[in-house]
Length: 270
Image 1 (cartoon, rainbow, N blue to C red):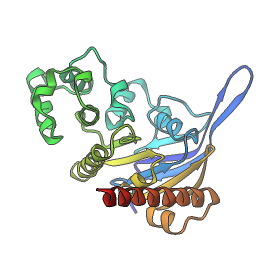
Image 2: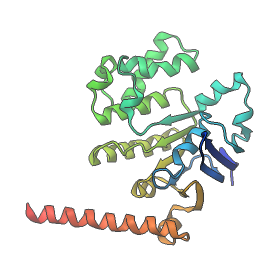
Image 3: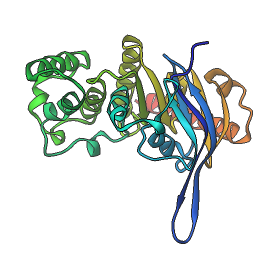
């Protein structure tokens, strides 16, 4: 087996205030291997977003360590942080709140290139044009503002902003949850296509078990800051071991059945 691209070793994170301490994560250990999509599932407050922010080096762990390409990200020198941020990018849940409303789309996407790339203005523009074509984004959107775009277009711009610096690792934080179902399906297929074409490694953060089942090769289940189960996607859905995982799968199956029944009723009434 190949060496992991990302590995977490007994990572814990506690948030402290004057009155209390909140344990967000407790002794999390996992590996994400090159080329795979690893899904982390769990309800709101389970610690998924905290873990993502730790990997992005936005937080420091209370204990434990995180390695990228076998090097601790928390021992990086100042000169090594920017190169790391180029390799590890994040696509967010709600693209609207992550896009500066006062900036043109072209400026938003170009920002990363200005920071991470030696390309001149003409080369940057050419790269962005090619990327927009790859993401099926009309070039006229480059001179628009975020509020002038649809939800799906904004999410594609968020993807463009992450991919323009050519990362090797993506964190997908609920990438379809703010979108309607047809648009979410389009983004799902786009992400899978990009993952394969660009030889990416991804961490999918989601509470949507259907999304995890469609995208991921392995799944980790977080419950109250603890990693209670980790296995292949097939085993998680076909033979869940932990009671909380079984509860999640049971709820997922019931919800899916209700949706199917709803679709059948709509069809019959037409």
